[in-house]
Length: 138
Length: 138
DNA sequence: TCCTACGATGGACCTAGTCCAAGTCAATAC
DNA sequence: GTATTGACTTGGACTAGGTCCATCGTAGGA
Image (cartoon, rainbow over all chains, first blue to last red; front, side):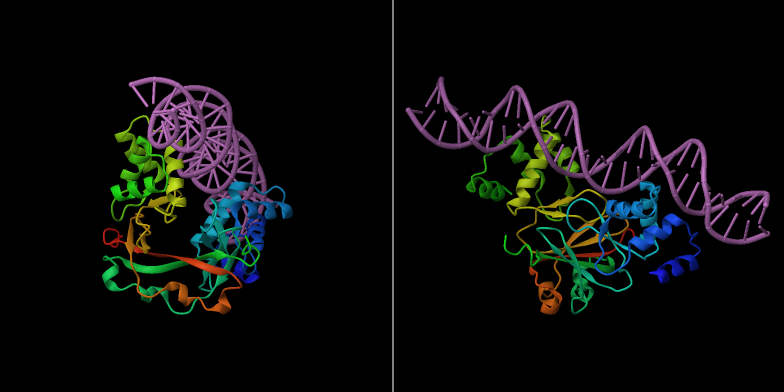
């Protein structure tokens, strides 16, 4: 986490209270907050922080590759700070809970050349859907 | 296409001009329209059709399993009528063009039990990202 | 300590999508 | 062919999520 702040500073990021708070909120495993949730938690620590700043900061973290956007369930994007460990997502279709998972094999190699239509493919995103233990009974 | 209309009628769908038009607009391979695009094309054929009806109809087609929602690029959901042939998507990160692709292997089996956290996993969605031939030069 | 360009603010604005009360009409019954 | 009725459609108001922008504040270098 503070290594995140270090990395950012090293990249010439100007460090402000707001950015620090957003980076701190996005810390830990299996964290997949919406922008609104990030705003709420950031506001708890720094009441004057504005919505625009949270969106700006999230956008920057994403384009720096420190955080990935996940569009998994519902309308709002979620932000996953676990960007340096390649992983996929397992989503409960009932309650929307997200877990990070690490499937075996490389899904990129599953796509034969004949199915690439001349695209240069560089990334794969896999979302598993099902029911979490809590919702399985429904 | 008209088999789609037949199937729907067979399931007790009340056939109206609006529903017919929406179903007709969503016809063909590699069709991935946004709700707004569906509305535009439907309006061209049936000027009085309303936005709410397009959304309602799309929602019904999705819950009947005739159409799948794709969240691939940009904000708006896209609707893919090719629901009866299992397939995945290849998206150009530049222009957003989507192709249907058929990777080898079953991605479901790539997720070991130890990574399922008690979830009953029933579905996988794979999105390949890269650049299409037109955008590769950029 | 001063300067200044980068960042933060908040309020207006936009897009995608949902909701609802009222009106319409497809399908069934006669 | 007509009557009936409940499912379907309409349009307009509303909401959520997100973006934009002019102005103000401040981190960090000189």
